[in-house]
Length: 160
Figure 1 (tube, rainbow, N blue to C red):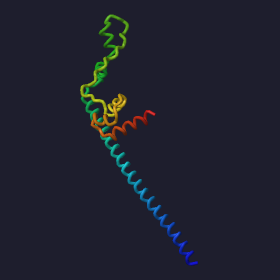
Figure 2 (cartoon, rainbow, N blue to C red):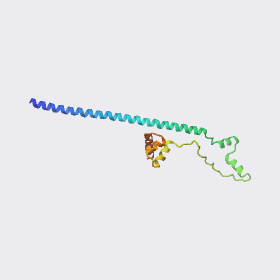
Figure 3 (cartoon, rainbow, N blue to C red):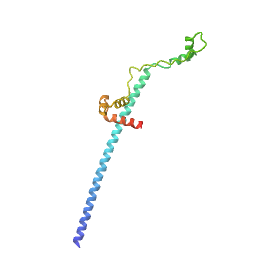
Figure 4 (cartoon, helix red, strand yellow):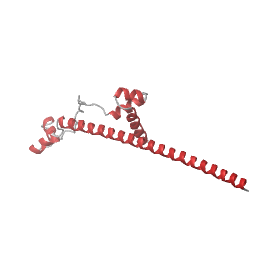
């Protein structure tokens, strides 16, 4: 009878040790998964912060560009001061003796300013459409590989 109890005790001890070992491996895997998720979260946060900085810089460049650009409203300001509209001025210039007013002629399109540079996102999308790899795009534009990947993922998500 004693031998039977010893055998049962050893079997129970073995099952308990196996259970403890299984639980410890699961805890280690859970800790590793948590660390991996924290790393991914910090990487995503870093990408977002760099993306936001890029957007802020682009907005500052655009603000400076707008401030340097001559005003489009010179015609309307003249109209306010003199009381004549642009159409009336054109009709008096072209047909002084004609009773019919001249038709509207649209303004000539302006050339792009010399300081204009396309955004990094548009450059990345152009290069991707031309068939460049992510590594090539990152090297040529001096951007991070993950930043380029993130931008392309955002574009794919928005286009779907």
